Amino acid sequence: MIPRYSRPEMTAIWSEESKFQIWFEIEAHACDAQAKLGVIPSDAAATIWQRGAFDIERINDIERETKHDVIAFLTNLAEYVGEDARFVHQGMTSSDVLDTTLSVQLSRASDLMLAGLDRLLAGLRSRAHEHKRTATIGRSHGIHAEPTTLGLKFASFYAEFSRCRERLVAARREVATCAISGAVGTFAHIDPFVEAHVAEKMGLEIEPVSTQVIPRDRHAMYFATLGVIASSIERLSVEIRHMQRTEVREAEEFFSAGQKGSSAMPHKRNPVLTENLTGIARIVRAAVVPALENVALWHERDISHSSVERVFAPDATIALDFALHRLAGVVENLLVYPENMQANLDQLGGLVHSQQVLLALTQKGVSRENAYVYVQRNAMKIWAEGGSYLDNLKADADVSAHLSDQELDSLFDLNQHFQHVDTIFKRVFG
Image (cartoon, rainbow, N blue to C red):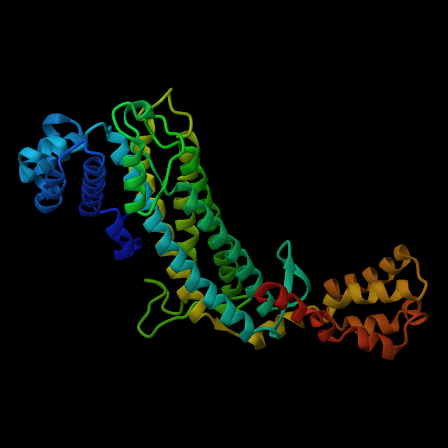
């Protein structure tokens, strides 16, 4: 992932330095376990920890000849460790190192993304309570529907990202497994105790049954979860982008001093952050299908998954981590314009209360079909001519025959729409 859309904390997890350090720790912990089993001398295990080191440039030089990254690493490690290096990697296969390392990296990446979700959730909770009763128009098909509150909008996103958090916790648990089971996963040349020891030291669970690789259904579920989170990010971003449209202008991204919106038009204030997040969501979701396709490997192992994961595992996690923090910042600093929300609510002369009138007529004994006709025909006049919907209804003989002016006035009370806001907030925030 390019630096523009990366946070240093996340990119560090995927650095060559971090990767080889994890490789070394897996090998060294495995040697400790082998020493406890009496397979290798205890002094040798201690020496490996004491002298173990690596040089990335040297590893790359060796790999150019060997065409094998794990062998290149082990060769370089032996140059530091000396004679006792013969005890490293005993009974193990390359995938034991590679797959267990990927599990560690994905676990650590998850922890950073969970922190990003927590920041976003805190921002959504705060803005939801701040605007609990800030009236705004709800829209369906992009068209004015009925009143809601901005707080309810934020509460909806809070609930959604809470589900995202639960899914990521589950995905982290599922992908955080360790396989040190040797070629084709039979433990033919290594005791299962080694796997259990390495798993404990690296903060993982043992893989109950591996082939020569950790089963890729785990990874498919993990990246599918990231894809869902990305889609939730896009949903909130699209909502903000719509609210910032000039014709709507109910809210907008914070525009800092000195910020420029357009190279040609000095007046522009564009929703560049949420547009950017919409694009980043596509990058994260792009990992989902390859992750699903990686499940079907040949027999006990092939490496068709390897090249794919080397690209999308860092890119998807780095991009999503960045997106979560960017979105959290957007929410924290979002500029809200309640007066514009009220103006938009009033734009159609009260049409947003049509259902209240429809239901009231049915309660007075009017059939639903006739009530719908009375309410709709008056609404259509407003669409065509403008004016006051309430006045139209009061002037309609069929309506006034059943509802007094005072009763109609009461049906246009905005607060009727918000009588259960507290109930919804209790459900969401507890």
